[in-house]
Length: 90
Image (cartoon, rainbow, N blue to C red; front, side, top):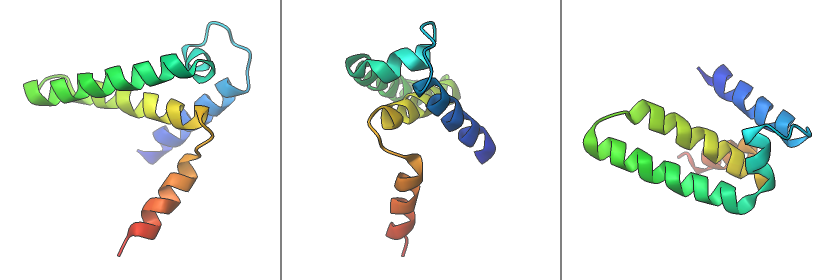
């Protein structure tokens, strides 16, 4: 399960360092306004899906993907976020 998330993070980081013009991930990484817009859109869609009890998994996956891209685009490493969460455990 977590291996899939690790693979996603690797792909995002690879796309960040590539010049793939047709890559949606690369486009998001290079355009902060688009990245912000998409994460807002995806969160709204997830909340709507939860309210309607429909398509929740699909929308949650979209939010996770766009969140990982947003973090990477802004120099926030998921490893640092996970360490912060670990430090908060009591």
